Length: 81
Figure (cartoon, rainbow, N blue to C red):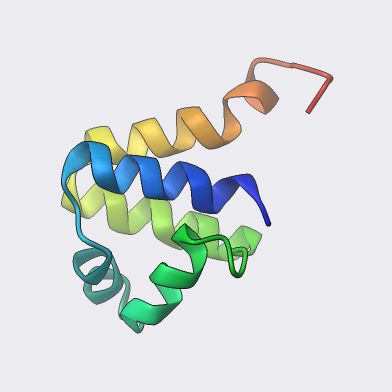
């Protein structure tokens, strides 16, 4: 599975945000967040935007870390991604 779930799990742990808190903020079931963070399913592009918006509501630094960690190589122009 993908990088988004690994990055999300690390961000949630680093900033002390529970899977449940993120799920409630997003208006989804906690099991969906669990599946992402345990790399059972990957969030799609539109969902990445929703995750970022929810993280921004909870902790803007967490949202920025998620974006930087997930998209950093792309934004910096790393062609090996």
